[in-house]
Length: 171
Image (cartoon, rainbow, N blue to C red; front, side, top):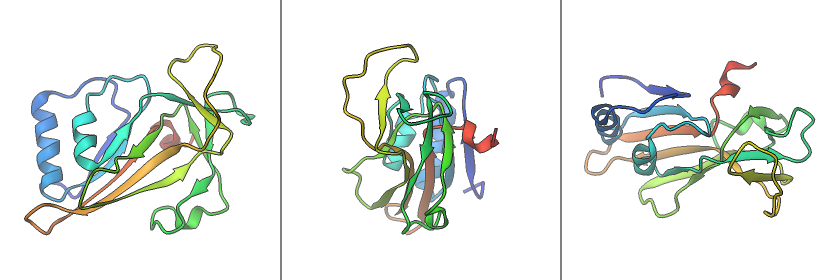
């Protein structure tokens, strides 16, 4: 690969077809990614995410117990087996205006892990407007880690995908 890692943080517009092809080729060469996407943005990265084994739901998560605002959720459940999240066991992480991201179970040859989840008092909505919510509250995945061998090369692909980019600015 031409780069040690590629970071895609909060894209506000679509990528060119050639850029998507280059990103997929980079993944095929054992690339490393940090991807943080925001709900409501039309980023056209679903093909790349599918290749990684991650689905970006492009919804809005709401925590009914949050004192920080309706669409500010707390990451409160961490995968303690993950190298990324193992030190976060007793911490909370603020994710303002975030979407659910989930591992795609049909992807073979990759280890996929939801590394941080919301509280069980959360639910998903499709638009940022007052609405009645019929869905049952549950815990949602906020970030997924991906590790796996690239077919026929033995190289290791690694990625972390978040359903929010704002949390990276620590505002």
